[in-house]
Image 1 (cartoon, rainbow, N blue to C red):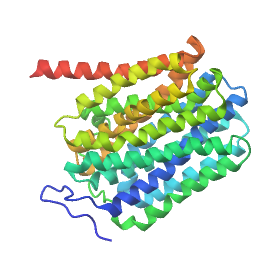
Image 2 (image 1 turned 180 degrees about the vertical axis):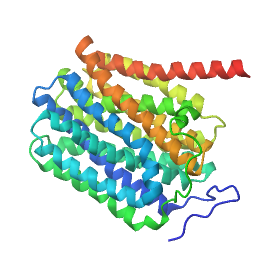
Image 3 (image 1 turned 90 degrees about the vertical axis):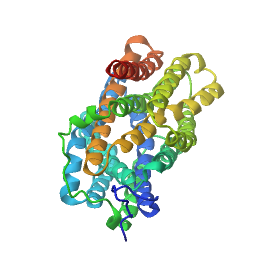
Image 4 (image 1 turned 120 degrees about the vertical axis):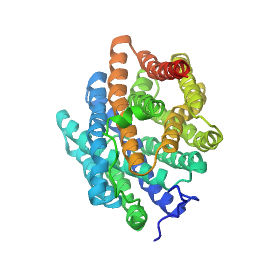
Length: 394
């Protein structure tokens, strides 16, 4: 299969659908498994009598794994190839997913979380690099909106599967592992179209974290809210007298909102000269939606309406932030920056579950909403500081 054609500047001239379909299909299969696995594992630990703080600590291992995997993923792909590295990561993730069922001791879940999320981090970094490289600059928001929409479908299907399969027995673990293994098919088919990393980045890995701070801070907030919220929302809902199935359906509604908003947000961001005000506006809406949760939790319909719109704003931080990053860099620098982007997401996934779990234990059930608002507020503060800094510099 041929590589996509590029212009004199090395930018893709038009959308190359075969590459995009392969990368998007692969990561979406993983998204379904993660959407199934996060609430599944939290509910099982809750049934075992594990505290919210320890559940959050275990979920935070996902972030630790991502922080370890992010700096080395580009180096491995440079040596082994993008497609081959992705297929190897699929195998590790599928084996780890089944391992949770057979791990009776709580401590065993920590290394399993590490291997599972280390592998999925590798898949996310290389898939998003592949997608960003295959996207024309003027259509990057649209392409990433399509990616985020399909991924959101996966995350919405995951909790829906959880509500249907429940948390008993080996079946949900086998289903999750089988879905992950499906990701290897599109990667293998399009392996010759995957981007080639024939040069190394010019800068040290950690330099890329601060190279585009508005994007990396956005994905930190997204990571904290998505990992902490998805892991601990079932517990928050159950302690608020909702059933396990109702909690799972609310997560599905939030995923549908995520799905519905990403293409419009991507198209709108393509029309902007600067995507940063849009990122700030979504964070402000995130604060408002978080603070509304304690007042709406007893009204399932109102909760569903708010979570529908709130889910779109939350995931918009990721989509628009990634588009902003892709508009600034290309080639090996983009691959390294994408790894730094995922690294910051990983830091958020450590801070989110641990911070939100501790907030619930300290402040009661409403601590869930207050902690979410705090993470969104952090991004608003970063955005204001950046605007003030730019104003003084100019």
